[in-house]
Length: 357
Ligand code: F6P
Image (cartoon, rainbow, N blue to C red; front, side, top):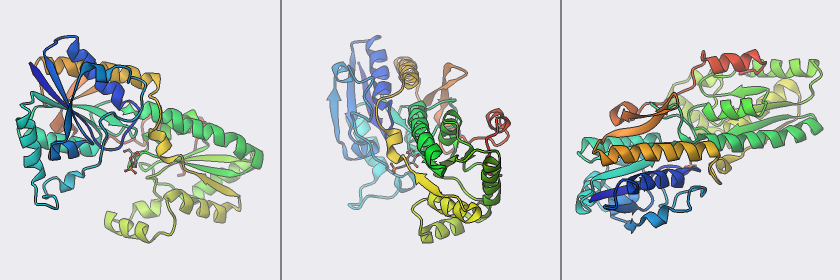
C-alpha cells in the first residue's frame, strides 16, 4: 500500500489540477493499492492537520480546470521556524501530521518559496517529490514551469487588445506583466504581442533611452508605442541602490506600481499621452493552455514513476524536452533569471525591440 500526501502551495496557476491528475493517474496505472490524502490550502493544511482522503475519481475531469481543488496559501519560508500565535512549532507539526498518516511520500506543487520549505522537510527526513509550478518560470533546474505558457497566452492577448486602441488613439501604452523578480513572462508575452519596448528586472532601464526609442518611432511615422513592462522592472538609478534603500523608497512612492511612475516619466520626457493597463491576477486564471496540459501530464507520469520506485528528494522538471529529476537541494533558494546576453534577447533586439538601454 502506498500512502501519498498532496499539497499545492503559493500563488495558484492554470495547470495545478492537471498536474495532480497526472500524478494520480500515473500511480493508479501501476497499482490499486494506494491511498491519497489532499491537504487543504498548502502547508497550512499540513501544519494544522486539515486534510481529506481523495479517490482517483476526484481527479477525473479536472485536466482543463484552472485553480486547485485543494486550495492554496502563501506560508513564507522565513516564518517556518517561527512558532505560530499559539506557540505551535510549524515544522514539528508538519512532521507529526506526516507521521500520523504514515505517509510514504508527500507530493508538493509550488514555486520558489514552496521549494525552500519542501527542501527543509526533506532535510527533516520526510520523503518529498515536487513539481515546478509558477507563471514566473523562475525555478532553477527546469526549462519550463507549468502555468508559464498559459500566462504568456493571457498577457499576449492583453497586448493584442491594447494594440488596436493604442493605434486608434496614437498613444503610448504600458502593459504591466506579472513575473515577480524576473522577466520571463514579460519577455515572452512582449515578443509574442509585438511590443516595441520590453522592460524586465534583469535589464535596468534608462528613461532617456525609452524617450529616444519613442521619438524614433514617431519620426519613422509610427504614431503609437506599446511597452511590455515587468512588475519588477527597475530603472538604472534604482538598480544602483541597496535593497534596503530601494524598499524604503518604494514604500514612500505614491504610485501603485512601477508602471505608473514610468508613465509619468515618459509623459514628462516626450509630451506623449500615456496609459497604463494592468492585467494582474487574470494572468493566473482560467483553463491551462494545451502546452501546460501536456507538460503536467508528462511531469505527473514521471513523478508517479519516482514514487513507485521509492526515489524521493527530487523536483521533476523538463530539460531539452525530456523530463528530469533534480535534487531538491539544488533547486531550493535559486532563481532562474533571464540572461541579458542570451540568444533570445539578442534576437529580440535584432528585430528592433528596445530594452530601454
Ligand atoms: O508568483 C506568481 C505571482 O503571480 C507573481 O508573478 C506575482 O508577483 C505574485 O505571484 C502575486 O502574488 P499574490 O497573488 O500574493 O498577490
